[in-house]
Image (cartoon, rainbow, N blue to C red; front, side, top):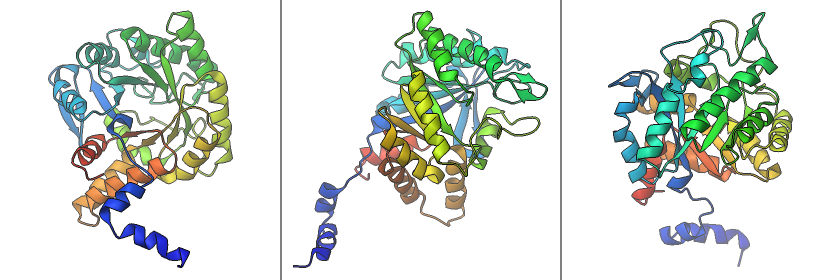
Length: 326
């Protein structure tokens, strides 16, 4: 018997293929991003992301009920404030969009893990991820406002805060502030390897967070670098991160794989807005089979080492799982 024949025989039966499958996705491992707008009666479709919406808190019930019904693990909240200034003060307003949404979800949908994005780009008038000094983001001054925002999310009841700014030392700084204020059990999901990527374009429309000048290459990672990502991950682990993240996902599967190899903590992947919009646009043109692409992309991310996946396709994936298609 030739050994090379064995894999082919395993593939012939659908039931045996299922038994031999190495990678499975559970809905509990999916995290759905939500854009929370200030105001009332808002459900506004995002032009660059068909099927995704900005919601006011009073319009969340429908989507949250669907997420719970499909057993999706959690949500990642992004705030869209009405007021922006140089320091992004709306980010730590106890009555802000994210803070209000956290309180509402924890009270009415306690099954969901609530994660909050901690960054300043949605809240600053200039669209950069921190405090500016001579048109450069000042790292240490930014740490102070990030910690204020993270603490306000923890006070509202967030299960986990997710700093996405890529400032040096922010994980340790936020951890210290949370602990000093009695939030030792609030977890930190670190955007550890966040690249200065062109895949974020649709998100910036969704959140109104495009920088008014320059770019974010000075504080996000160069797409050419892989070893640097491992150094960033090691630093975040040392500073107390509970979960590590690689962002974007599909174009950085090598980084995700290497991150999982060195990490003693769960690793998340963020399948970002550009990945979502490209699939949607190609499917609309009839160039691809949308359902198969969604499933294959997610399987590849988990196969590369992700323990959890932040994705705008969480609903579709959970329905595929429910229907026995994934």
